[in-house]
Length: 492
Image (cartoon, rainbow, N blue to C red; front, top):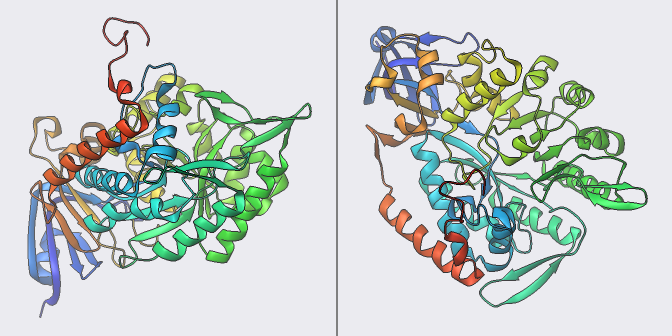
């Protein structure tokens, strides 16, 4: 007698990204509750299993849900704000995030962001609450998780201390009250968010510790100076780490150990070697680093030896300012994921298209069109990305025992035909907008391109309303206007 199960998803094909990298054409997936029970040829699935629920996705290729390892909450409401201005986008949004935003801003943004992740087939994601974390009150990070929780996605809230010097100044936009925040205050806020959110929503919400930078300050010639991406310029970490930087990293590692969670942060040239010198226990498989612009060969070796993963955003300003040695990192044995860095100032959560851009940038740099084959690109946003977040036992591939996080890419379009070489076709032609099926934890969130139990119009309308109210409160409505050289100029 056939085994009885909950759901059988019949796919036109299945790209499993399992240990054998099987491509089943046609293939099927058996799901019981929130777990995958079987993945096999469609004929075998039909012969061996019967279903309470049968889903016809034979016009699609099924993949593991995509994993975006680095982003920023808030960005979905500040896309393009201030681009080309003297203050620039970063300076503008810092004032919005830290002095003009309310809980409603973070909640409305979380719904808009979650909706875009869902539409783009990104079922697992990570984000800081702000361009650097807002840590004066836990309520902002908690609100920033609301949309992901409600829409049923898997999400990591990444919160931790911002860069020194301290204290940092924040404003409660409702009362106008200013608050000065010390390193201890930021650590306390982080601990509260962990205690409140981590492991909730049946395990779909997690909290990692996210200091803004690994080693944010260096002392050179007796003076402290920031390192990394400073006012949109790359400043290498040279000299000795400042006492404040060392104390911050020590406290972050201590809290991560106490709370049994992981660390994700930005890192730039010089910072990995510095961390290894002053807080060597920070470098471990529980650490993942975003950007990694300007890293030396020695730093890549340190990452590989200690199991530290890299999160590469090919469209980020950090990569423009200083290259992340992606191919060199892979050849050194570093696990590398492709990420979006959020949806602003000039990006989206279309992770599939960014994987293609990541590959092309490396091919241009090395004048070598053989670099980053299609399968490797897909690995870097599925199983390698899951590994970077310490979640590879649960997500990132389609195999028995793992969470039933599945997406389907609609093959019924001209750009995805002829129906051959499906791995190549998906990696090099598909975009997130081709997502027509999404399942997370065994729950169907999208089928035949239609969202289930999601009022998208309300989310969009609320986002427009809250964004404009916030921009007016911040006094930045003029930053919405096109800059003088938008048309016809060579540069802003």
